[in-house]
Image 1 (tube, helix red, strand yellow):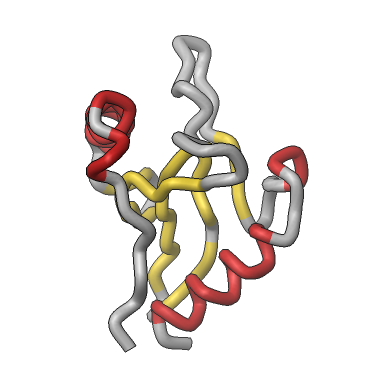
Image 2 (cartoon, helix red, strand yellow):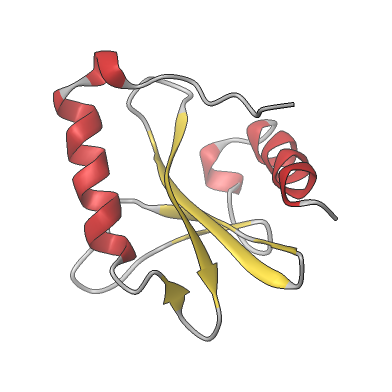
Length: 106
């Protein structure tokens, strides 16, 4: 299945559910003892690769923001995904007017 189509199917499924219903196998909250600031990964396969877009709920109500696109091959790649996600989340919080809805190029 093409990456865009697989992502669209998963987002359509998840968007029809409450945040509490975002769990495996379609999504997972990323947690660790030192905390991950409520980051979630969307989980699906495409092109024989485990796709793991990572984001958070915000900045607006009923909004999920994808901060980066990761993949998994035994561990999440890029390895510094948490630092990247944290920086991007802080940037969005400090400049919400710069955040725009994503539209696929069709």
